[in-house]
Amino acid sequence: MKKVTLKFATLKTMLLVVILLTPALAVGKSSMIGKLGPDFAGLSFDGYSHRLDEFKGKVIMVNFWASWCGPCRQEMPPLEQLYQQYRGLGFVVVGVNVDEELEPAKKMLDKLGITYPNVFDSDKNISKGYNVSAMPMTVIMDTTGKIRYVHYGFKSGYMDKYTREVRQLLTEAQ
Image 1 (tube, rainbow, N blue to C red):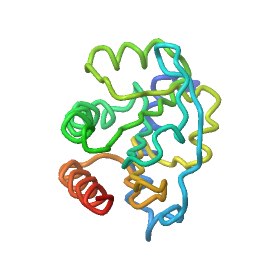
Image 2: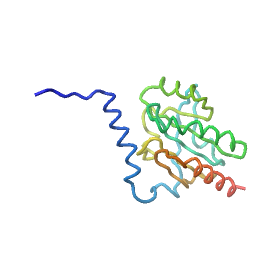
Image 3: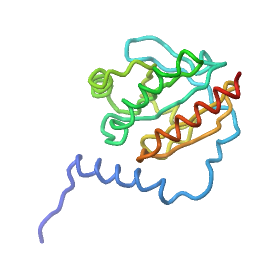
Image 4: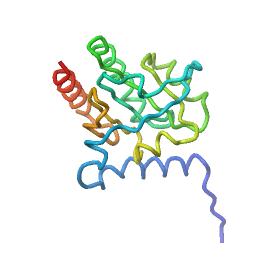
């Protein structure tokens, strides 16, 4: 009988498939909607500390991502465009990276030209606080910090949804 071993890359691929399929199996709305987003603190990739609370009074999009996640790579440049378009009106994107190591994530941010704040969730405490169950996972909060929208994964049409939701929350804030 031949011994079969799985390589790390294969395990990572299998995990990614499970993560990406999880949203399709989920039923109903997130239990977080309507609740205040848990405050968190994390170090940015350039060594600065960021707290979610520092963005209070703005429409906040928290985007959980990983460098090994293909949909994350697709989503981040349009998120950067959304951030640039609406940041002057009181909108911020805060990326939360869940990689095991800092360097692959930093390289990805640099390669994609991402300028919105990003923190490194090395101990996974931020992810646990938001019950992250898919990559990417995007949480949009109103200016009071209440979670209004939660999106799992990234599919065609999501940027249109994000834009509508951000515009709605910015309009409500005026």
